[in-house]
Image 1 (cartoon, rainbow, N blue to C red):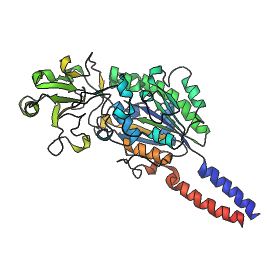
Image 2: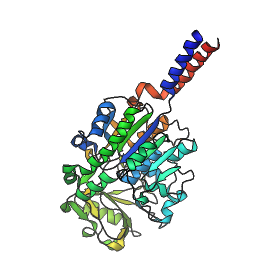
Image 3: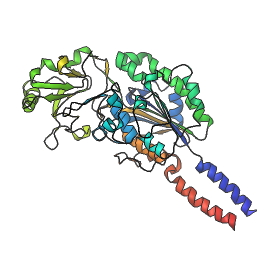
Image 4: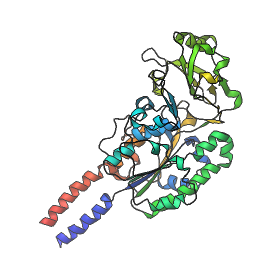
Length: 430
């Protein structure tokens, strides 16, 4: 009788603690935490808010742009460490460039993708990983995800039939990563104020997320995390600054980037002259020039960028609501047609409008909890912990900072299960 009773207790505990939990992570950009209240009535957001965890203060890394933050979530490293500081990167020492996944060299793992991302570490440990609608699917990874749909397919979560097919694969993978750029694309093109009046892109995406929320409700082993990595700020035409109007461009070898920040690669011997010109003599309104050199640089530590082959001596940083551009195409990287969007990302990561959104929901997570500050790199260590990945990268992310969102200290549940199982097994034997 005791043995039979113990057996049933053991089975219950194994089911309660030992069910392999699956995680879906939807990664978006452009929807700031400060804007959440405008869309909180949508079914998916309302359910996840009331029955899961909400943080409207997700702190991005700098530059608070798409690729740097996505890869920081994947690696737990800041852009200074993983090197992907933008979707277009220029190595001013070697002349090599990263061109937003459009060049063959962009896809060489050894050249640009030095840090092992989460999905590779998970694959190495035999976890089943699916990646949907990511440009990273084109990269020649040493351990590529078995199921990876690139943006080159032009498919998105909102494509006809996609949500139905993705619900059917929820049982097949331990980690499903889904990227959606629709909110950022619309907010960037129209500006967050104008786009926000209709909320069309948010509505369309949350309609699809609602299908996944309903699936989570039915299951005891499925969890959903929605992340918007950073916000976006309106930039009116009168707040656009052109560096050519303030500086003789023959002093400049090339400028890199545009919008919220812009690097200046000076000609030999011109560094201090350019700095003095734009700092003291003829400063650009609402734009500050910084030295990036270690020890003597004046860039605040929270920007976490220093002089390197991909970060030049001089960096211009615009105030939120302004943007800086280069007119002379021969001095501009990337060259070509210049786009000046109404919505711009990449500003100070501590600015309220740049903070992102973090919403976990499912059996692993507490219900009705509003979390204060979370950092993008915290999500990396959270996923590493939940997926029990052994060789995660050293990171400034902290599980202590985020573990309160978990149910019943799930971190230690596996060790509790081992102890309880040993005790009950002993009871069964005797």
